[in-house]
Length: 298
Image (cartoon, rainbow, N blue to C red; front, top):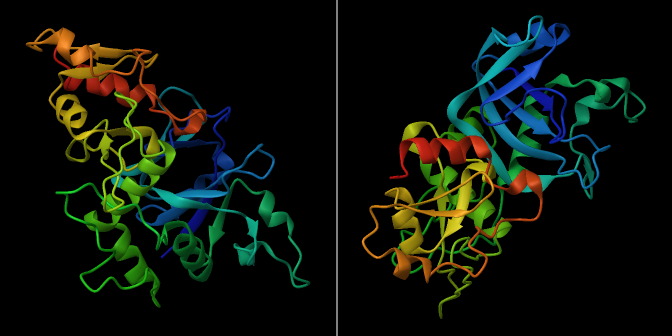
């Protein structure tokens, strides 16, 4: 297995979309070609204000020349194999440097840490992914939903001895659904983006669901920018194309709705979706456009 670290920043000059593609110059071609079919971890540089550190894991499907930019290349991310971390992992946290491979013989950070693409040892990969995805105090589902119980029926901890076993868990739909729900509800403060309501039932469960904007079955990634928190009714309407969102987050109502005034009465007062303040956590226009073109009924 050839693990690697890809540096990415939300204000990057490159034409990146971490859940789908990673644009890079030719000096990194051989390193990234070695990653084809294997997993990488995304890292936001420490120079970025409010850096997320290591923020996601993904698998590289193929490397192709960038058809739109001569001399550049694209690492294509395999559909369904991108996953945001439930908790971003700092480069240098309470446990010290997470990526031990950048340390020199004296235990100091070496010049390797400046490389935008660099190999990652299996031990470092396991350490980072474990910290990023292990979330014992998970948000519980609303009543009536199947409760994600962890990684098997015994609720075993997300700690494994072998990298191969770790990787096999990253492809598990159960694991991915659990993490996706966690990151979406956390970013939206357990509040429906359409109604603005935050309801917690007597059992401490949030009465809101994590919805994919572009569905998993249509190769939608498990990324926060492809997610939105919705109440059960709003989720049902969104999936069936009865409501949608503009790129400016205006709430759209389909002409096929039989009671448009009644539906609009359910919306929050602004008429816009209530989304996280941080730009990197908001719905990506590319996914909103896909929903309008493929689900929303004009």
